[in-house]
Amino acid sequence: MTLETVSEVKSHGGVQGVYRHASAATGTEMTFSVFVPPQPEKGEALPVLWYLSGLTCSHANVTEKGEYRAACAEHGIIFVAPDTSPRGEGVPDDSKGAWDFGLGAGFYVDATTTPWSANYRMWSYVAQELPALVADHFPIDAARQGITGHSMGGHGALTVALRHPGRFRSVSAFAPIVAPSQVPWGDKALSNYLGLDRSKWRPHDAVALIEDGARLPDLLVDVGEADPFLERELKPELLERACADAGIALTLRRQPGYDHSYYFISTFMNDHIRWHSERLAA
Amino acid sequence: MTLETVSEVKSHGGVQGVYRHASAATGTEMTFSVFVPPQPEKGEALPVLWYLSGLTCSHANVTEKGEYRAACAEHGIIFVAPDTSPRGEGVPDDSKGAWDFGLGAGFYVDATTTPWSANYRMWSYVAQELPALVADHFPIDAARQGITGHSMGGHGALTVALRHPGRFRSVSAFAPIVAPSQVPWGDKALSNYLGLDRSKWRPHDAVALIEDGARLPDLLVDVGEADPFLERELKPELLERACADAGIALTLRRQPGYDHSYYFISTFMNDHIRWHSERLAA
Image (cartoon, rainbow over all chains, first blue to last red; front, side, top):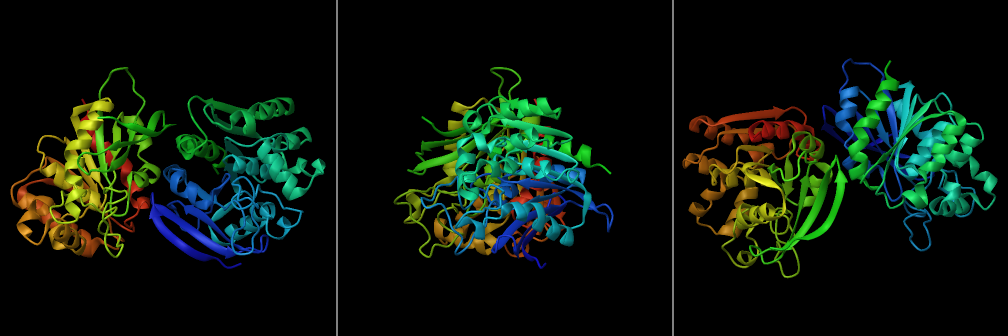
């Protein structure tokens, strides 16, 4: 698989790159960013942290505003940020141009309905195609992977981790959608991408997956108490209950005064990278 | 003077705000950002660090990409980022829409030529009007001020500091334009804003000011060796020579591999804030 370098810039001692490739999963070009920290030794394989972004975002939001490079440089972690949907000519979008469905809102599922099923295959993209591509082109140690994400990307991180037991040594999320089947954003996305049979939604609902027996070693989640989506879309109490019932060691931190933005994410990014680093250490 | 709050968001324990006001200096509305770190004691006055931005930027670039909040929170420093030019209906711009003159490129001078003199009064704005406004609305200790900036904003920081001896306890710059009279960006801006009499340019040229007797206590400057503007526009060797001749303690660091972008700035922001903090300590 070939990779086109869009840009590579030195930052925090490492290299912040943006790359583009033709995706078999989505049938489109896809763009993603990778930060490779300074490497102490030539040929050393480094742990990797996957970051899945939220509604409306591309790779660029976290790359510019996420404030992850200093900590990734310190701990020697590669940071990968995919896009949130297919894009480009011919890719269908929400008919009313809504920001919570269609472009920028792939919800990390493989759509099964028309017209979405042709391109909206973000599950295959982030869980299979991109990991193989990244492993081919970057010095990652596949035995040391962590995953995190924000909002819709927190949903993506949790569901990908729950359905790939053993792949990720560390999992965390910022303000994740934990039970899309039970909230408006998820209901809109899953019904349109997957159809109305709700049994098909459960593999894309973190709380349902845990109820159905999926497990994680432990989990760090931050939410802002001033997040306008907290009560209606995020509902961290559903994750709290599911983890308690399942015996998953959830560290859920409700951060007073914080909202849903990258001002919130960047504040706690350092903590999350430290959490992952402790679990990804050789 | 009244201030309109555009937004206030909690970040890194403090508040990142964006504010708007009617400027007497520019005759326009002006927008700027202020980060107020967590305050240990009510009523305590905090040191302030001014950050002047470069060509094409507004307050937003450093606010989103500057990675200054963690260090400002740690050291208890207020961070203020003004815009780089007047904006709005009726404000003239470069006739060809060039990015190095006009909107986003006020060069921190009070223009004396037509049509620029009506609005392009960024010297008065950043040196007088905005400091008075900020002192009115935020808990700053005016005896503990530092100033820094990037590129055109490095030029602004150096010239404002050199012409206000005693106002700033600490001065630094990222990839500054140090001798605008001797480089294309400066020649274009100063000839258009100030006219062709080059004696009028000297008060807006850091190297010329130092040659003419202006002094700073000491100075930290970072430049990237892969900065595409280094040789043609920045010419740090001119500052090096002027400081050596004048006995100014310049710490000039040539950073291998770094460019002119916020990926460079954010890498060394922490060092700069520590430099200022050491000099702004009570």
